[in-house]
Figure 1 (cartoon, each protein chain N blue to C red):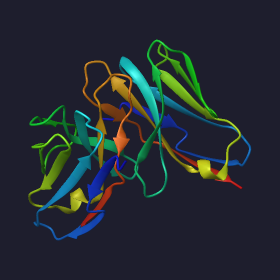
Figure 2: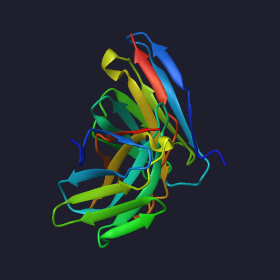
Figure 3: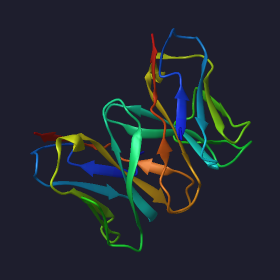
Figure 4: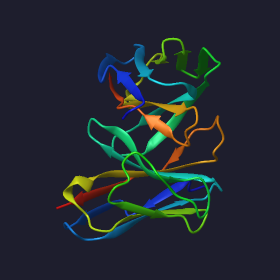
Length: 113
Length: 111
């Protein structure tokens, strides 16, 4: 009964480095999302997926790429990290139904120096 | 651009008191949801109210929705220290595939 699992929980990157954040859900949810949370900004949607093999841009997609090769996994990639990408990243999933909430992971705290 | 805006940004009350926080939004919605976030943790879904509902209860939580004013309120009754957290409203906008979150209300309940 893990729900949504994010790895890693913490990471420090140097400017220009790349990394991949992994999100895994065990609830057979169709929809998955990546948000970033910054102080005073709330949560902003980066990318989302409405099913295996699909991805779409959210509000702040620049500098990020995603892949959903398997239904249970949603990967967020940073090709060339920038200090502006210092944030807390949250993955969430839902069954896509109109009257169900999201299940969130515990977050990844990323610092780019 | 945030869909929801919570008010107040921060609220401090004594244990046992009621806490009320408000959310305003801008466009037509299918439903509105409230989430809680404890410090350093992910968001947890609390309650969902549909656009055709006006009030909903869940334990000590009471949510109201006024679609004519595009606003919602979350009332936590008989607050406890464990209710200390940030609370976010999120709107399921008609035609969208995702939720739009507000900036949150930071609630502190003093024992």
